Image (cartoon, rainbow, N blue to C red; front, side, top):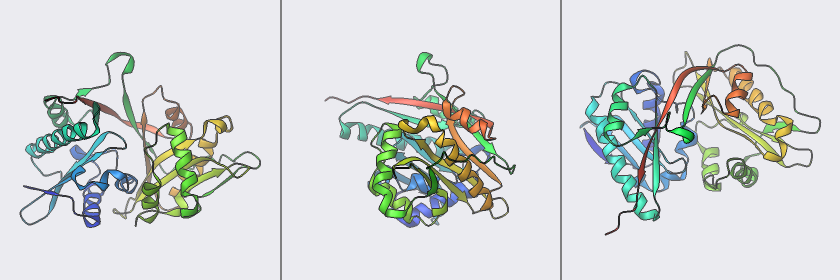
Length: 310
């Protein structure tokens, strides 16, 4: 197996194909249909944040990305590779994490999500110094992986004066970024990232929805993604979903979500997935209310890095 650096858009297509072709099993991931969203992030601005592992013939077997906007290590492996490659990925991520901590000049914590059944991964993570966050006291953190089948989605109409519609292209990107930052209380979303999303080959404008208030302000958003790589069973995913705090009393998140789900089903999605925080999370209740059900728990592993002083 040969490790090589990231070399551009062609690599992104191969990386996405690896995950979307093998979305289940021991190498399963919660990020499948929504990879265009994550692959458009500014983590890719520095090629050193990405690594690929290929055979001598150049066939992609694994990849890893230091997703700085989320402080998450995203990675995927071909289902037939041996366990040693996973440990190589974690070693690369550890080295890059230390470099990034030194560059940023502040302590950092990196996260990796796994399913409870991925015993080999969990063993390797613990050996590499990652700690499961499911039971660490007051700050315990775990997630759930939910699915919606082909059952009809209930229609939730917006209040009078509000309109659900697709984002109006690049002209509304700046307003969207402002809303996204306000909802998630972070500046991680950038104009450049959002513009790259709009230009991604798998982006579908009809699934990029916003809710406009009577005064024209953007109040809520929901983006749907469709994995069409397996034509016999295309799957959808929701990422992200949010509503400005000034408008949450109108349940606009539910309005945008239900419309996006119905559009995904109209596009052929046999199943629609979403990942969210554990059972105490407000979003969890929202997804359950429109028909999602939990199919797997998701464990969050964390490793902290301190600044090394010479």
